[in-house]
Amino acid sequence: MVTYKIATKQDINELAKLRIEVFYDFPYLYEGSLEYEQKYLETYTKGAAARVFLALYDGKIVGATSCIPLSLEPEDVKVPVAQASYEPLQVLYFGESVLKKEYRGMGIGVKFFELREEYARELGLPYCAFCGVIRPENHPMRPQDYKPLDSFWIKRGYAQIPNCVTYFSWLDRGDKMETKKPLQFWIKKIG
Image 1 (tube, rainbow, N blue to C red):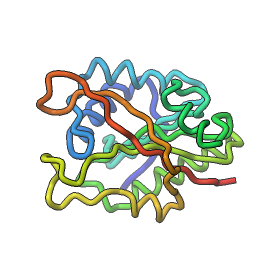
Image 2 (cartoon, rainbow, N blue to C red; image 1 turned 90 degrees about the vertical axis):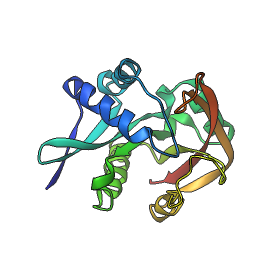
Image 3 (cartoon, rainbow, N blue to C red; image 1 turned 45 degrees about the vertical axis):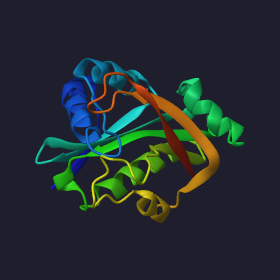
Image 4 (cartoon, rainbow, N blue to C red; image 1 turned 30 degrees about the horizontal axis):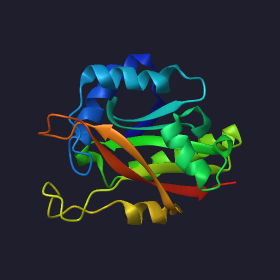
């Protein structure tokens, strides 16, 4: 049975390992480190307005999803959305969702969207937004059976914000240096 809870500092190590495991796969291809992940996750477990919701199966963390008011994010996240005429003070930003492969298709991803949208309503924020990495169709590490999440996001009521892209840098598997990757913003009005 799947249960949900809000992450605490005690969950950081297990959560960091989960993020490294899930983001290792396409489309992120992230070559992560435990130290970086632990530091990154402090933003979400220390901040009063930030949340990480965990999915647990038989008490074991199998998935996680994060959110934070967009106004608390760095400029490279806020500015593109603001330039697209959305006020950052009115947006809950969804950081990431990670879910172990064997637990996909069980409704956990849908529940993650519900939990974050409910939290946005609690905060009085009328918009929810996130961004997803853009990888070329012919990327050499793209699996034959890869299915982008676009249709899942559209089904949840999200739409791409036209020409609204940011860039994040990380180390891809097999690379020696970090490179910038484009990420497309998506948004939904919930209130």
